[in-house]
Length: 140
Image: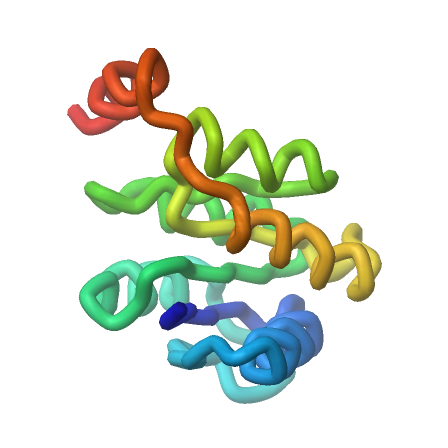
């Protein structure tokens, strides 16, 4: 699977770890930045990744809390980003909401757990059915 990654400075370390995990598991990695820990603005990187939607099948976003970068990403048509804090969140985001992006807060998420949540997210399929019409109503 082709996976895009983006973060601000506060999510850089976790983004790099998750990129390595993805590559080790046979995924193609596309990095939309940032490239270090110098202070940057999370919306810039969420928007850059969203503009590159044709370059990824799933997207991983990381900032300090995961909140800001997920809000910025969800401003884009066709992008459905879920902030996850458990494997259940990761599974339901895919099963019921057909989320194509996942967000993490580096300051709030254990890196090993983030790897596990990402694996659940990538392995879970959208159920469709009654959820399809709800997902269709998301776009305005």
